[in-house]
Amino acid sequence: MLKKVGLALLLLLVVIQFIQPTKNQSTEILASDITKVRQVPADVQEILTVACYDCHSNNTVYPWYSHIQPVAWWLNNHVVEGKQKLNFSTFGDYDTKKANHKLDETIEVLQKNEMPLKSYTLIHTNAKLTDAQKTLVINWAKSAMVGGETGNATPVYSEEKEREEH
Ligand code: HEC
Image (cartoon, rainbow, N blue to C red; front, side, top):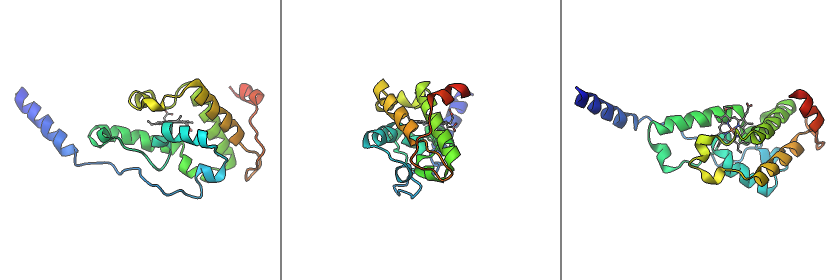
């Protein structure tokens, strides 16, 4: 009996290898890419690419084990959910209010050490951010918040407003 169950599980494992989620891979830089709508210094861009882009952009770098099921599904969920919440590749599609809110949340998740996800940094150790890196991205996010309907270069982030809201 146990042998049969084991065999069935093994077979299932083999079969599911052939059911792969669509890969999130596009090297095209859209007009709505964050780099097209905001100033992103090279050092900030580097951190975002290494630590956030696998789940928050249109281009995921897939490690070898990500092709193995059920790992692939589990990872795909993070990518789909992550992108749905925040996509730096289409950041320009957010209206100013939403864009500012996403930047505000970026600051918050970094301050609270919620991002990158722990399960991710466990393997992607280079995505573990130092305090200096976090500060760099936080300060950038503050400066990238803009005022006005269409967005202008005036940073609108204020520590005071932030404290009131939380
Ligand atoms: C392994 C995938 C993964 C990585 C890497 C990752 N995130 Fe996320 N992120 C998610 C998922 C999944 C969610 C949605 C669920 C949640 O909030 O926990 C999310 C949510 C967020 C949110 C909340 C957005 C909202 O509107 O609620 C922000 C902001 C965010 N991530 C920023 C970042 C930043 C900044 C980095 C890099 C420093 C990063 N994330 C790295 C997967 C990831």
